[in-house]
Amino acid sequence: MGHLRATVWGPAEFVGLPPWWLVGEGVFVAVLAVVSIVGTSALGAWTGCSGVADGTVGLVCALALAVHLIVVRAGRALVGVVAVLAVCLAAQAPQAAAGVVLAEQGRVQSVVVTSVRDAGAVRGGRGRYLCSVADERGVPLAVRVWRGCGQATHPGDALAVVYDPRGRVPPRGVGAGVGGAGALLGLAGWAAALVSATVVAVVRSYRLTVPSAGRRHCAGFC
Image 1 (cartoon, one colour):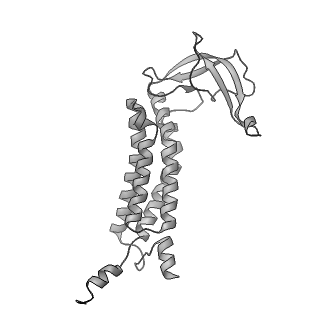
Image 2: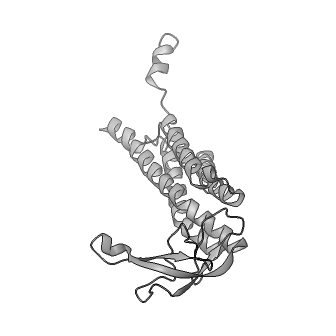
Image 3: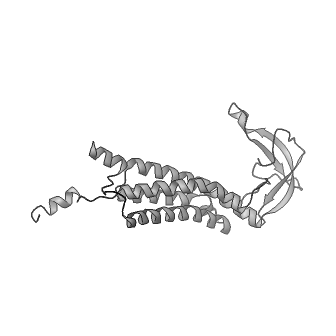
């Protein structure tokens, strides 16, 4: 049972509080992972590099974090929790990064609604409404807008959208209280959860005992 518990949750072979350097190592690994996942998406959105902005590199960083925890022999359950949180953060980061770009350098223009769809009705319920829109020249935009689109919206109505003049990120509807800080605030919960889980996983991976292979190697000298 002790071996099973150590495999699932980590051995945590220390008495009392964990060593300060071990906690520092966990914080360093966690912060490095969060900065890598969020930073790559932000850099990709700001530079217009679609291969980075879409979160692919962030997913690679999330995988690298999980592999690192496996290498240090962290508890398998904690590795799974960290991996899920890291993937969720990597999935949310591109939208937040695009929101920062639009908040800082976006411009607002008026568009015309061409069709309205209840996205919830497709799944058998009620939820977010999606509006297909076209610009002042009648050219349809490639994305559907949900901010400002509701049950009372009809084809022919005007909506305000914010777009990037350089075309680095897709346009989106103008929403109240949406800014650069607000876009990143949605990531705070995921980032905090990932940091906490990573620190716990690193701390609980600490071992005092020598691995069995090492014991066999030094059996004649001990």
